Image (cartoon, rainbow, N blue to C red; front, side, top):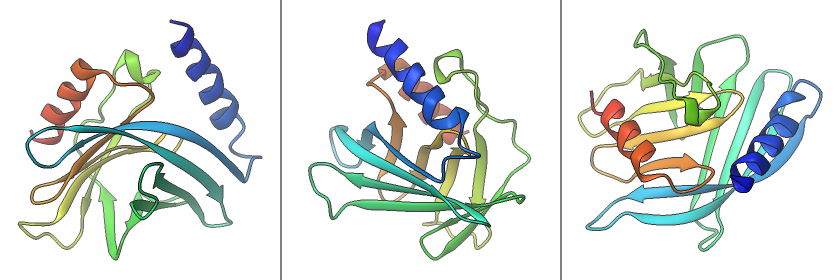
Length: 159
């Protein structure tokens, strides 16, 4: 419970003033589904804001060559991830009490392919919640390991 309270306090400090804070960082726990057994690893999240985008960079703390960068274009429903553009879908956002009541939109690539990444679950105040990839890793970003919440997110990604 103390960890949860500390996380909520950190979350509030980081995101509550994101309009004025142009840069901050925190640690995120991840569950990576690729291969026989899921792996749990820590990523450092660095956020910075520019005039036209919110930028999130995730760096694996064990292998710093593993990086994820995603940008949200301000005042649009557009994410940039890798070389692809993702648009928010009409699908009902994912919410859960364990996610501070935030709504996570579903974003899909505009260039659909069978092996494309997506959907992506994203909230501008939180950043990435999940990236689904049929042929690559599916990654869930949570403050602490929560198997039941992770299962629910995986189920929603595959609906």
